[in-house]
Amino acid sequence: MEVYVRNQAEHLLIGEDSFSLNFLETCLGNSYKTIKIDSSSQSVTIVEQLRNADIEFVMILVGSSEKDALRLVREIKLSCEHKYVPLLLAGTTISMTTKLELLKHADEWIELPIEPAELMLRVQKHVDTRRKVLSHILVDPLTGAYNKPFLLHEIERQLNDVKRSLEPFTLVNIKIDELDGIIMPNQYTARDTVIKGLVDYIKRSVRPMDVLCRYKEDECILILPKTYREDAVKLMNRLVDGFSQIPFQIPDGEAQVTFSCVVLEFSDAIHSPETCLSMMQFSEEEEGIKRVIDLTEEQFQAHQKLLIAVIDDDRFIREMLKDQLQDIEDEMVDIEIKAYSNGEEFFEDPWHRQNQRYLLIIDRIMPKMDGLELLQKIRTEYDRKRYICLMLTSKDSVSDIAFAIQRGANDYVVKPFGLKELRARIRRLIRGSR
Image 1 (spheres, one colour):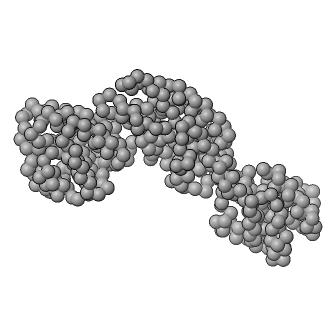
Image 2: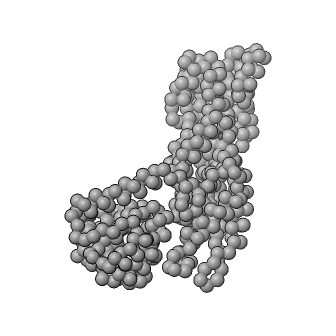
């Protein structure tokens, strides 16, 4: 077999006649992968090309060996249908019987020679139709799971729900372990059979509210609404063990297939859906057999830090607290302190949106956005577990203190205050939040 790759494009031209292939390539442009077929084993290569790239159409040049062309068309037809890829045939005059048999499996016959403009027009119509179809399809045709466009839409919906309910959701990236050595009959790899079996198994094992989407060829994303990562890890450990007991039929008998997964909880709507997915990737160190990797815990351990925001319109208090609280918690890996003169200034700084733990020391009476308004925004739009709020104010009535606690303050210190007492209260809040 000879394979000619002009560049990383999205079309396949297949045939034995180099002259005709070059003519077709010239007509269609230079951004095509050209595969020259000269043996019966080439359908596997074509199927792999269809699997691993976003191919927009396949064109087979039918030469003197009509039987080989018919065999090839039959073998790659199913893979084309799974990806909604038009399968086009081109050639000189052949018998009507053979042409009709070929057209049972292909989308169009193109008689050669042909004017380049007409060829481009006919090909482009098939490509445009495919793009329209894909834009309206939300279900993967092979597995019945939702596809990537639906996945992005659903993650966006979950992020919006986090803002309203303040309850987290968890994403699980599920990846098949080591399939390359398994070959199914008729020269098709086991991937399609296994991925469909995996999707069926997962859908039977989760709640109706959970959403499973096919993300890549060997990967699926499971969306678990209103689920903490501890519960997701328990679920996935059970599913990993259960799936490994399911036998898959191969020519040599039965084989057990396993999968691994990464789990990540999202408790704040600070990322885009695309960023959420980028955070779910397997690293080379994490890949293995039957592994359930808790990325939430790993990220927390890797980035353990306390961010302290002093929000007070009194410059003296801001500077004094920044200096006095540098060593507030010796056991923490790192402490970072910033000061703001009011609530609006705090929220305008992207610093407050990191995936870290925060201690907010909030003055109650400030211009633009006072302490109670700031507190209400934090408790209604952010993850409660990551923001510790200490109110610092001169209002000392029982009703004022009760009102602040009801709004979500973790503690309340009255001015004037002693640094020793303030430090003790902060230490208690920090340790109690772990």
